[in-house]
Length: 210
Image 1 (cartoon, rainbow, N blue to C red):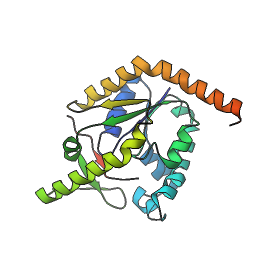
Image 2: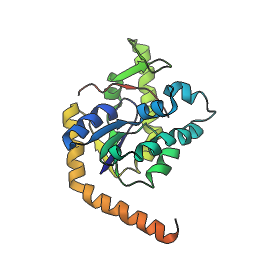
Image 3: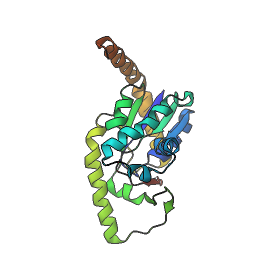
Image 4: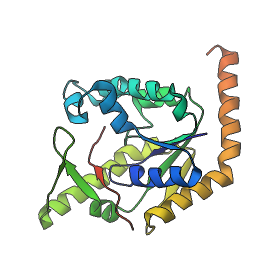
């Protein structure tokens, strides 16, 4: 079974995903890291090569294709970028068995986890002023609105507001146990039909709208 986690930046996909994989006894992969390994450069430098985020996503999805072809990923938790259910990523996921889970939290909680990185993905220590906090809070709310429609495509949506990392991972695990089997059968049926037709802990994360 593959579990794909998505959600806005700083919601906790990587930290919760790693804990979830531990609870399930399977591997964990962070697609951002896989993209950097695949292209041999940082996310920011790779994004700078494209005129639109749309074209970037289709190119970056090549790393997802490679990851899904690796035997170690057959049973794994994979943290997707915020746009994991959009564009090139979505096109790949539609051809892949697995369960997609969208994580959500309150904007203020997400703000408290915000982390900054330079162009080479190295962490930067930065203390936000009150004005900057208000600015980033608005940006987070915009992200939630922008990506929210795509998260409706997820098989499961889990609200982690007020939960620690472990509690959030357990909540996702319980949601998977409650509905996962039926969802996997549904995905298999959809793919077969297509062929017949011919076809409160801290969660460090970079801010990235791609």
